[in-house]
Structures are given as structure tokens and as C-alpha cells.
Amino acid sequence: MPGLIAAALVALAGATGSHLAPSGLVYSSANARVIQRQPAAGSCKPLGSGLNERPDRRCTPGAVNPAVTQSTIDSTICRSGWTATVRNDARNLWPEPDYAKREGFYLNPKDRLETALKRMVCARRMTLAAAQHAIAADWVSAFARFG
Image (tube, rainbow, N blue to C red; front, side, top):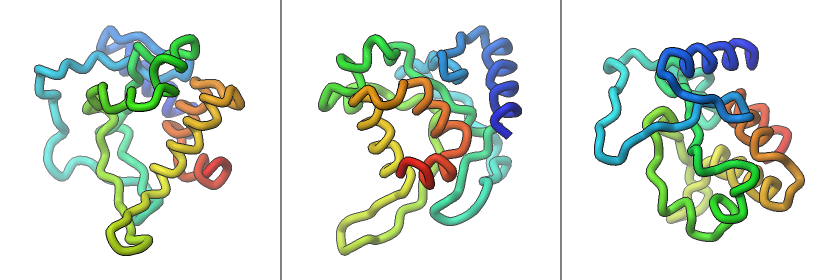
């Protein structure tokens, strides 16, 4: 499956004139002033179900921020508060289910994985490209390994 995902991302990059990051994901070209084209209603079908649901790659192909590279992690993702300053590219949007852990607190397993991967990248125990690939290829498997 990861080979098919990589091939699809390369095709997407070629079709859009985008560039690929070392992880194989397409660099984002999102503009905060432009409404991104959305898939037709009902055309997106998730893989899996419940808390382990994964996005339909046709509808959520993924994209990375070109400002975030291995050499800039200290001034971007590893700097407290940085993520609040950036806009999320529509190619990364997928509704994530939550479940109640205790009253007033919701915990999504993918959020826990994102935090774990970020900590490993910032501690230099994993490269940025490896973390991006792990979550894009199959976050459920990555959660079992790193979450």
C-alpha cells in the first residue's frame, strides 16, 4: 500500500506542478485567501472505522508545509506556539473522531501519535521525513508502533 500512496503522490505533484518533500509528500501551496476546491459530497469513503478511521487518499492526499524541513524544525514545529501561526492546507483536512476519556476532555489516538512523533523529531530520535511518512502512509500502524 505505501508504494501505491507514493505513486499517487508523485502523480499528484506532477499534475499540480508541486514539489515533493523528502518524505515523498507534496509541498503545500495553500493560500489563506483562496477557498480550496472540495470533493463532491458523499464521494469520500474512509478506510477502517471508528477511532482507527483513515482518510480516503483521493479526498485527503496530504501536503506538507515547505517552511518545515529537517534544518528548520527548531524554528518551526519544535518551537512552542509555532503551529498556531500556520494555516492547515485543505489537502490535510479529515474529520477525526474523538472519544470521551473523562468529562470535558477528548482524546483522539491520532493526536497522541502526532505528539509522540513530534517529540521524537524534536529530540532527534527520528527524522522529519520518517515521521511524515509514518503518519501519511498508515497512521493506525504508526500508532501501534509509536503511540
